Image 1 (cartoon, rainbow, N blue to C red):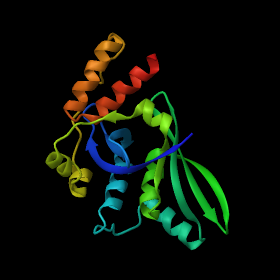
Image 2: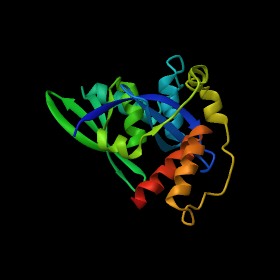
Image 3: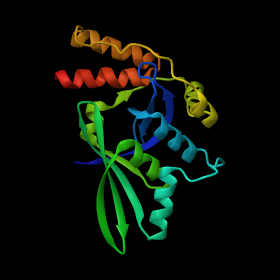
Image 4: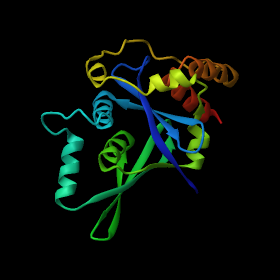
Length: 202
C-alpha cells in the first residue's frame, strides 16, 4: 500500500461534541482533507507546537516526551496513520535509536503532537484517504484565514453544547446530502462523523 503525506491544515471547534476539536489534515499532492476529532488538551498542545513564538512556562506532556527522547538520543522519524476502525484512527510512531528502528502504537492526536515537535513527516495509507478523505471547496482568501487561529482563543474558548445527531433514521442518500451540506458549511467535524456513518454501511 502506498503512503500519502499529510500536512496540518488547521483546527476547528467541534459544534456537536462538547470538549472536542476537529484537526484538519490535508494531502500534500492533492485536494482531499482528513478531519480527525481530538480532545481539548491535544488540540492545545498541537496549537502551541504550530505557534513557534509561544512557549509554555513549564513543559507540556508532549514537550516532556521530546526532552526525554532527546536526552536518550531517540529520534521520531515519521508518523503513520495506519488504520481506521469505526471512525477511530490508529497511528504508529516510527522511532530510531542507535540505528535500530522501533514502531510504537499511539493515539493519532498524540502522534501528531510529537511529529510537530520532532519536525517529522505525517503519512497515511492511500486506502484510508480514499475511505475517509473529503473534498473541501473553499475560497482562496477564506482558505488562508482558516489556517490562522489564536492559541489563547483555542485554550479559553468553550465549545457550545449541542445534542449529537442521530444518524440511524437517515438513508445513505440523506447522509450523502448531509455530508455535502457539512462540507459546504465548513463543519468538518460533522462531515467526519457523517462520512464514518456512511463507511459503516458500505
